[in-house]
Image 1: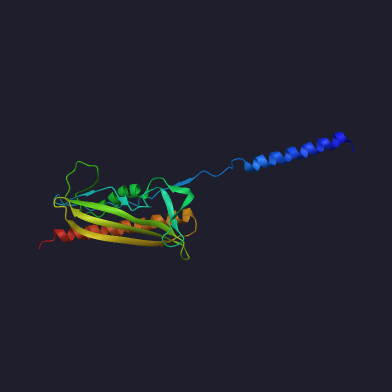
Image 2: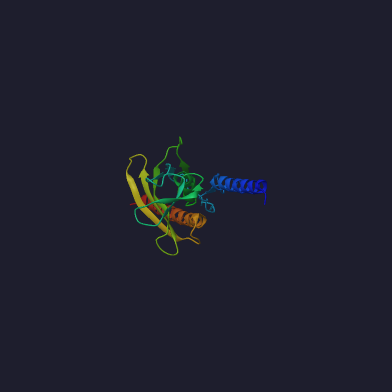
Length: 211
């Protein structure tokens, strides 16, 4: 083999290694992030309510620290919150929850009107809610999504708390990934919405009963 041929082959090998190295070190192609929503449950036509029925105003839902962003939270050990890197909610769950509350409580049929703030409507009662947790828990099998919501029903004129309750729903996830958690989260939220609507309706009927 001639010196020229050997030099050419060595140069080609070095160039191939250099190109391979550049390819490995260059930016990797990753899938775009996935975005998920909390779905509105199937609407139920409310029963006719009398003109004397109270009006409810719903304040924007708040969330405790750690649960006030669009990140999808999961838990593998106590006192530690992690989140999926490539999956997010389209909006913080607290923002998505408020219109769902309006729709669920309208279906209870005990209010003349249910409106969300900001609104110029005068109200008899006000609902304040706070998300305590919405997390995908991997501490048991199957993994589960836990949703905890605190609700205060307040007399809007006297600022007196009429009723307070903390709802806690836990739903098994069909798969141990972000999508499995999202499906379970929607089921947990919809269960809580039904329970909350029933709680509010029962409270209002109790307040309206003659004593």
